Length: 479
Picture 1 (cartoon, helix red, strand yellow):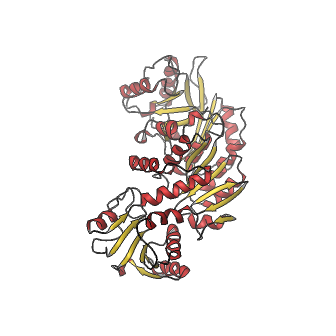
Picture 2 (cartoon, rainbow, N blue to C red):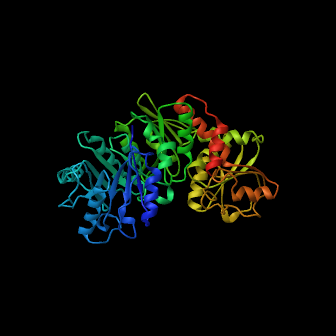
Picture 3 (cartoon, rainbow, N blue to C red):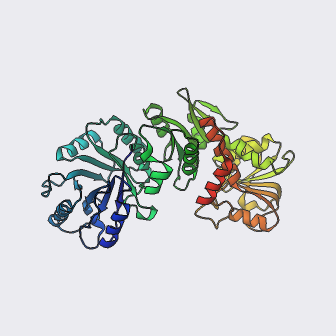
């Protein structure tokens, strides 16, 4: 079972005390961040509810907020231990620990905010020598290369030392999630999105309901989304719900990357049971070149699946895109404007051309859009050339997606179309669709493509056909 440690912080001692009482019994460990208090004070604890409490008073030198005298900080931790806290967190450079009750256990911590240290084993050994019941090492992660270096080292750690190793910052978040399956003694979580004490922390709700970390007694098959950004992706919510509904030992995680090749090289040799990925911006075309086996009509993939130790690339965007469009009109002989020339635009243009649609691609950079159009033998224009009439307009750009929901790639006077198809799915009704609909133009939301391509992904991973209406409702509830 993966154990959770809920970090609680507030400037008010009374509020912190009420939070400690509220969550006692819900998680095995609760950390009280005393350095956040406006006035140092040890909060009273609820007893005998199955939760062990950890007192942390992080000094500024270790990334915390306590600015008082060191002797006063240690005295506060001593008082906490004498008042019922089962654990105290002592930093690596605390040479003389305060007098603690014999039963008090110690988290020995070190936070590195510079580049990833060259010799992680030596750093870990020095922490062990400082003494502690749990060794905590938090490292700033700024690149995918640093992330994979950290994960490789975490894989090599034995079980003889109880430890919590994690990467800080958003690029380090995968280490927090995967650390639950690599032997971390506990996983730190936050009360909610507004209460995170460190970037990349999961919320308690995410850990318990979305990822079900306390449920896992062994490693599940690991899936996830590869992209940049991924913070607002609904894919983890949707696919985890599908796996849970289908009662499968699978988990789906977000993987924020800045280098897809480095990540895939790591995945190829990792002992972790990576089994499939969704691929989103900006990696769809790059990943297609990195995978040996692909089943895609274009040089772009949005799905990876591991079959008999071989990674295969699929493109469920192709069928997902066409399904909604073909249900509305006959495509042969129609004209289409495709806005954008990024990864998904390759799929859209290929799908339209395969249905005998005359395509014009619209971009902002004349060189890029010209090169893109030459790949497919179609016309190209700049946004400054619009308006141009067509039967169909497809938006493949991210303009208008959350949080910039008031933006639109087209203006009100540029809607000379029979149908507008916006591939943005969050929000479901974008500004572009509102403008088109107000002028009597038929519209298709990106929700339709997103649901269909995700359903096809899920089937590729599980062999099961998922409930598409449930998927739509999940997206609507969380958009």
